[in-house]
Image (cartoon, rainbow, N blue to C red):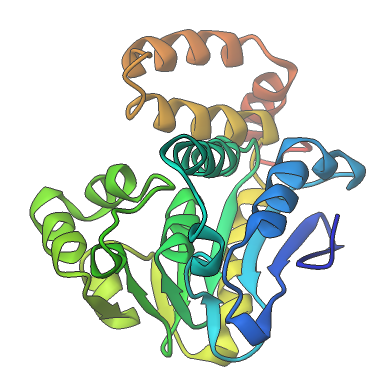
Length: 256
């Protein structure tokens, strides 16, 4: 793991911090590779992982976009490759087996907004701003933004935000469904941990499978309802479900 992305963990919750504060945490090739490496395999070094917070270093930005300087020498082929690798990396986050929350502590623009949208949930501090300004550069979002934004806010609002390149505040982002919570900055991490306190007490296999089932709705290669009923059947005979049902009947806390 290079120093552009920092990893820490406590109590089964890992924090992944984009660490380029002088560049407002803009995503460059090193950042994207580090994210791909960690969500692809390096997370396995953390024992008992129950959740992940993704955030940015410093006071101003979550991630203020992609590092545009890295785009100047790209060709059609290399540009498509960069976009595809970014999409593949964010798919790893979207399909991660434990809950991933973006703690958006400032500007989340372009690739930063796309990173936040790839997380399962988003909590924003009041100083956060969201946007996809790529059209101002003669580009479109390349890391899945044109696909995830309409899923979250609807087609019409996604069209407006993408075609105008405009920004929305944390409160506006909450109103349109882009973020789960908009809170004061000193409440940001506590709000994330409050969500994890609830998910950590639930069956870990069920939580993982619920993530997969919800994501199946948006995957054209899958039948979401089929994923649900087959997963339901598998879980029904699992040791985890047997413990959960027994605990409910016996009026005690489940020991997952």
